[in-house]
Image (cartoon, rainbow, N blue to C red; front, side, top):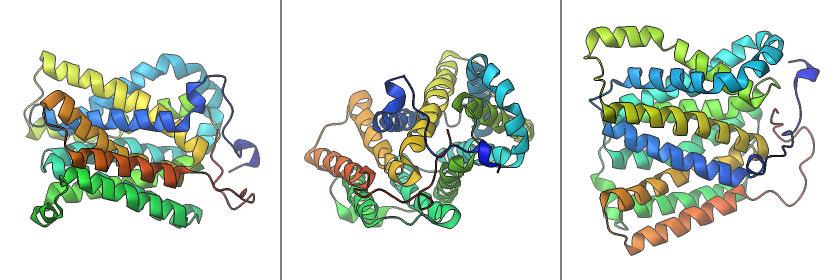
Length: 321
């Protein structure tokens, strides 16, 4: 990578929201929690690869008018780093989401939410393997506290329920999906220094393109999606919120504070999922919910706090602009 292609810190923005990493990451968790709910709701109605392809193809069309001039401007840089851009697109867009939707057809919501909390572990492993960045003691403590909060919510305060959980092929698929997304989270920091809109447009479009052969295969072996209002509303949601907005927010959040400090966002996803169940499904609020939410938020604050002493240059992952 040429030195001129890399900017060592996140470029400042005049937009207030663009400089609020924890708000951006919290909204990302909210949108992704909704994606899990929608994905489970449409399982059996929209084939998983078709859902992923329409999601990212639609998201690409949404961002293209806003990103076209940046794509033209950044294309020489993208072309020089075409291999890593395609790899990032396949990992974070093509593979992760297709595997997630396949998993949602094969396992229960409790299992998916529980496994979601393992996301920061994969980010930490990939950060160490690819960037040489170890998980700090404070981050490790924060992740553990958040994990206890997630378990309190999912197990309803009853640890004996943990022994009753049985993992199936859907759970294994989702573990693989989380490992791939951890890889994407870290590799996104090694992308060339291009505008964020260029990055979104390229990864969305490339991620959709690589799914075309799978879509063709799926159309031959499974019934096609029915065109009805519930399916269209589900597609509209996944194209806009967990795709266009969530990835824009997530990438900016990681750019501002780094992958390890952003990783606890995974623990907010099951917390938001529980809130959605209370609000939309009429489930009752219990003390274990309150205790769980308090632990999750405490863990996020502990793990996401910046180190007191400045980190020497060369010891810190330098996020691209």
